[in-house]
Image 1 (cartoon, rainbow, N blue to C red):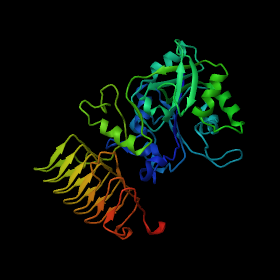
Image 2: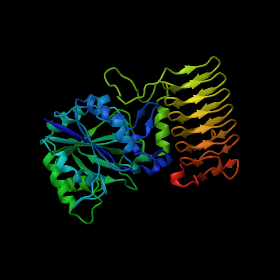
Image 3: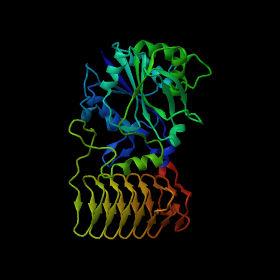
Image 4: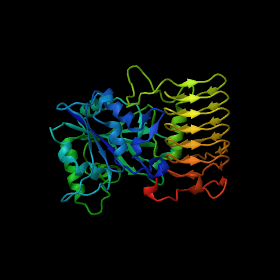
Length: 417
């Protein structure tokens, strides 16, 4: 049986705010050295699926540069599969993707080329390790038309997901997308295994429905269940999280720092592959205090710095006397002398000058955000829950205090950046 994986990576990711201002959500950094999409891609290659298509749309440049020809995942193949990135194109009867199903439908001519038996639909913004071969065996044993991976979530979070119910044979009897009052807590993971012709027919019928959102969860799956097709649930019991909000994104990375971690980044039989720059080893000066952190190559932690419960991407430089706690720093951030960062997320090349105080350990989870290449002047106080946009400089600040909930954006014209 031939399986082709299709990874949906076109979402704008507005709930990640400044982190997706210049990149697609699957291209956001995670755990220091990875991108979010690395986890789904690595699941494919570790499951021996070497035929992968990525459907991109919003700001795809960063994603395209990261994936390249697929070398880090051994997907740089010419005729036997490999990885291909597909983006929307303007043509007759073609337009920007308006839903997950529409994205697949617009590209189905390419997706069905070579007549794969099964199409595995995946999301590019989930963190998990799953062997899709078990799901494929289950699908064939049940003679299913569609198999949906599902997981138990906390009941108070169930309204965020598609919720499904199934009988003793695991055949799905009910599916509702993001119900206000969920009947149970069995959630759709956004992992669908379709027989090719079933998917082709479902997409084509949905394409002509004027009342459709052209979405798998809202339209395609409920319609197939109502049509009495063989739609089965495949329960998954491992770690899985949709990092679609700042809170879940921050918490998922803090889960890596638990003892033991909720999710293991390294296992000899299940390696998370990525594209990385050549950087020297991290340098930790005498007198630095580092506790419970992930420190990437190229980082420098100077004497007198205190770094606790943090994740540092390559090239982060934390200078003498700086205190950084519960924070996530992207590539080449610089924290100058005596600055204090608490529960912050800073995109690439953010500079915190001397004596800045950013965030706080408040009882309520409030994360302070800093957009790419912003510069925080000396002595600034940034309260928890504030947000600094991309490319912000000293002249963009009206005072030395940015209050909780306040957003600071650059006042420069685009060509001045």
